[in-house]
Amino acid sequence: TITSDNEDQTITFSGAGSAGDEIMIIFTTDSGGSADEVITFETTLTQSAGTLTLANLTAGQYVVCFRSNGTVWIEKSRTAALS
Image (cartoon, rainbow, N blue to C red; front, side, top):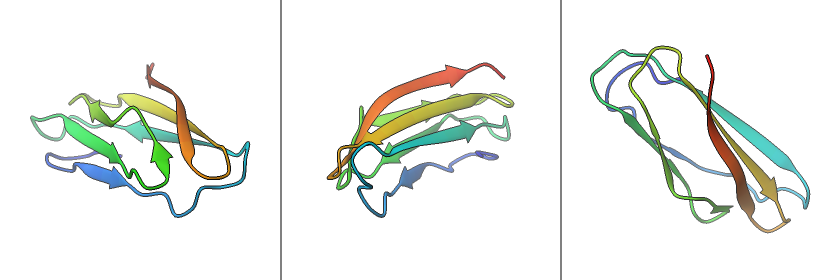
């Protein structure tokens, strides 16, 4: 949950999982600041579309899903969810 300015984060994966494993990450924002936040996905174990910018708004939700091929997590979807 993002609750103030300058909480840019890097998401690090500790392992590649087993083929077929899936993970879902849900980010929830808060308007506690004036700037957007940027989430970067660590590249060693992740094939991702890059960064995710979270808008500065109250209770905004973003969902990013990954699937493992046994070697790397591959991003399969991302969306801004209704709150």
